[in-house]
Amino acid sequence: MEDAVVFGATGFIGRWTVLHLLEQGRAVTAVARRADDRLDRWLRERGVPGTRLTVVEGDVTAGPGLGLSAAVEGAAGVRDVFNAAGVYRFGMGREEARAVNVEGALNVLNWAAARPALRRLVHVSGYRVGLDPRPRHPLPEAELAALYRDKGAYEGSKAEGDAAVRVAAARLGVPLTVVNPSSVIGHSLTGEAGQYLGLASLVRDLWAGRLPALPGGARTFVPVVTVDHFARFMAAVPEHDPEPGGLHWVLDPATPDLPDLIRLLADHLGVPAPRIRVPAGVIRRLPSALTGAEPETLGFLTEDRYDTGSADRVAASAGLLRPPVEDALRRWTDRLVADRFGAAPAARPGGFHSVAGSRTYVAGERTSPRLVLLHGLPLDGDSWHGVLDDLDSTLSAARPETAADRFPALVADLPGLGRSSPAGGAASDWLAELLEPVRTRPVIVAHSAAAAPALRYAAAHPGRIAALILLSPYFLQRRPSALTLLLAAPALGKMNPDRLASTLLGPASPPEDARRAVASAAAGLRRPGVARRTGRVLRAAHRPAERAALRRLLGGPVPVHLVAGELDPLTDSPLPVTVIPGAGHHPHLTHPAAVAEIVRQVRLRPVVDDCPPPPTPEIMTGPLPHHLRES
Image 1 (cartoon, helix red, strand yellow):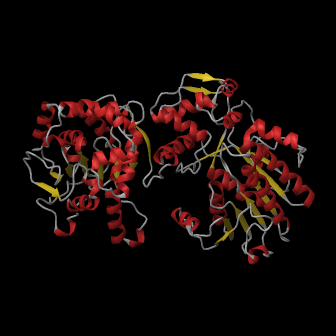
Image 2 (image 1 turned 180 degrees about the vertical axis):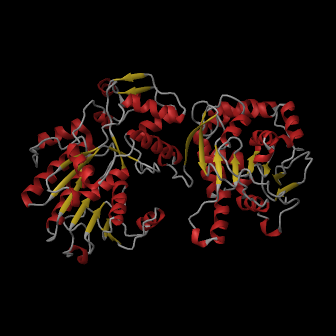
Image 3 (image 1 turned 180 degrees about the horizontal axis):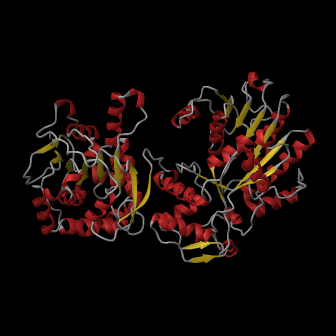
């Protein structure tokens, strides 16, 4: 048995606590409901080997033995126990919440009390509880019922659990430290999140255009702490908190007041911030069906401030510095959007950058890409994941020692589409500013409507790119009817992911990457203005003068390779065309391996500025090799 035990080890706080304990060189036992390899894989993905980690099955609700095996139960060498187990959800019943947050917490405390070498039990409570210097437990039923009625099941159970653990620890002589985190947001550097309630749900409503008014007042304070800072603090407590019995409020006092915080994030996302504030007391008196507010969250909307002095002293002893809170909030918000607020964790998370007046969502390599990938309508940058996965696999096969590497590609959502806000000028000017920091000569791969800015950029900056691959270039295909162009925007804005997938890809079941890409597009189209702007771009793109102008640009100095699906052919191409058998207008979604192979054959060779241009790429024309013909 290792010297540190973490309960709730696969949860948001627990897994980061495990990671930082392992970084300290500790031997760690992680207790989880399922003893599988998920935690070990998660740690390795973050560069922390699990050689000193043991994962065992256990359940804090399983009674005094916690469901642990006899070998674990009888272990005598445990020095430190960390309880990060808890249920965080609104709308629970009282007994459901108590089972983990009260009875489960007491079960962990009693188990820890039986460890003969115990140095410290570190218990995670909450910043809105634990303020009573003389806690009482158990409470008379009338008081307990009032507690849960006033605060709701979640906060009521945290308040009761905090008192129960402190009273029991004093009675049993358990060396206890209680840590009270505020709203725990994502990692300070990567933004990686793991819970999507509370403040995250407010950011989700802001992003989706569903936050017409802000709850609370001008001084409402919802403090935050990044998960990595909090987990490092947890791991540091046994060594750097000299005496047990401490109650530490771990939060960043520099967190902006809620109205300023929301304005900060609205500016970062490129969306409007609500101008109206509604006091929490008013919202509480209105039906939740009318306000859309979860009643239990309103208790967190106060102007209270908290004493972080004791936590600051522990952090100083351990050499821990709070990360800049506004930067952390922006990175967390980037990751929330990338992960679609928990609906689909991002394979290649990106973030928002200012480009030509647009808050542009960009993922991947910004300065040294070998590829620049531009999506068509009505998709976003996630539509390239299948192609990039195939390119990643080739990179890993060629260099197994760097199997975790990503193919160096820059992927951006076009201005006003997907996750990007509108730009002030032409899409080609936006593209020029997007590629200004690029120090290589990449190949631009543009799908459908993105061919227009790609061709114009190539004509204006021929020395900056090696080649163009135009996938389903719309201006060389049959023009849609005027009615189709007119009705596109209202139809797209109402489609669910399944309907959108069948409309774009046909009735056959698409690959998993394609389903995820279409789901991302459908979510974007439901945001205010996106479907309308998509329809506007579609109509402008199909004007006869625009189609003719793009056709004339095909004769420029940059090599251009045309690719089309067999089921959506080019009608009048002045250049050779690679036809992908069985594909329609979106071959990168339905036939990603074929598109990836075409990209490889363009022989991507990045060239640093001030170096001679690369040789003219060899362009594959005609039908695909037999091994690429997909049914």
